[in-house]
Length: 153
Image 1 (tube, rainbow, N blue to C red):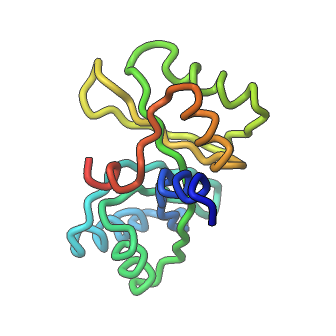
Image 2: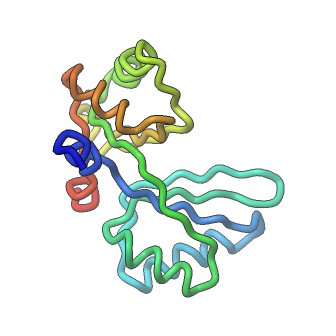
């Protein structure tokens, strides 16, 4: 593997996706499993349909979360996503969208969190081509947050 590709891969973040039946108590069961395993949720998103939901999580220990959730009967997968730090002000998200759109990169979904209001937001992206997106973002002077740093925020 060439050095540039290896460097881009270390910039990705592993996200856990948990498929949940859309009924009362299911989300609580998943969060209890994580709490009992002493896993910290850094950020999350829930998407739902009539019958099921997808809980997307960035956690401090991806492998442990994957294991304990599967051992508890949940259907779990890991997905590479990209975390981008932007100023917490109007236009922060737009600046990223402008850069990747110019290069024909598609955003499949996005969610974000802010640690301290008025400082920086961290936006989590699922791109159709994460390596190309990371390359474009870095060339445009965006701060791409490596997984290791994000897990420890």
